[in-house]
Amino acid sequence: MEVYLDLVRRVLEHGVRKTNRTGVDTISSFAEHYTIDLRKGFPLVTTKRVNFKAVLHEVLWYLSGEDHIRNLRTKTKIWDAWADEEGNLETAYGRYWRRFPSAQVDPATGQYAVREVDQIAEVTRILKTSPNSRRMVVSAWEPGNALFSKLPPCHYTFVFNVQGDALNCHLTQRSGDIALGIPFNIAAYSLLTMAIAQETGFTPGLFSHTIVDAHIYVNHVDGLREQLTRTPKPLPELRIARKPLDELGFEDFELLKYVSDDPIRFEVAV
Image 1 (cartoon, rainbow, N blue to C red):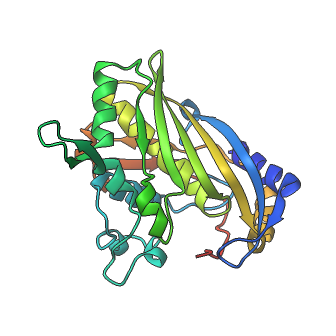
Image 2: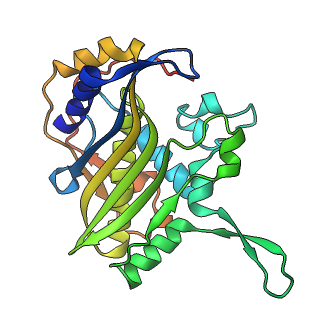
């Protein structure tokens, strides 16, 4: 995962210091971009230990379409800081992936009627019926929700694109915490791309990622400089059971040959 270390270096060397809502300054860089070839292995960062189980639980939670973390928090606490005591979450990615509210005018009455769109189901349908389409877009950004949400979606839209027999994914992220969030984002969307590729008969291709505000919290700098002294190890493999996407469970994913350096502790900025 030299590509990840290159990202860290660029932001440390060229970023500018900024204040933000958390009270902890960041070193920020605009419009960072990189591409990872999924055919070379599963891109789980090896220069520190990444909790793959938490990544997998998070992706399965997204795919469930739930708008709360009552089930997720029994597996991982990564979303607890942004949910209320009952586990309700103002911005739950999967709720928009699977049940995005769409207001349309009823021609018979002239009134707006709201229906929910399952964007993941629509993408898989298009991949099976019209794979050269350029309309395989999934959005988690709902403007009304973003006005009051404690944490509006950071990784807010992604697009699938087929080239030959390869399924590629491009993720756009408005805000990216390089030390904590980005390793999770890389693993999560690569896993999702691989699972959808298997469901639709393609091979995994490229994962491409644009981060509008790519930032390092100042209290993360020392830990990231420690990471930069470490040498990346060979990437692990990810095996996924041959099942329909919505039937996949935790036990259907197997991470093989993951060797990493020791964990590095980074504080979460809420």
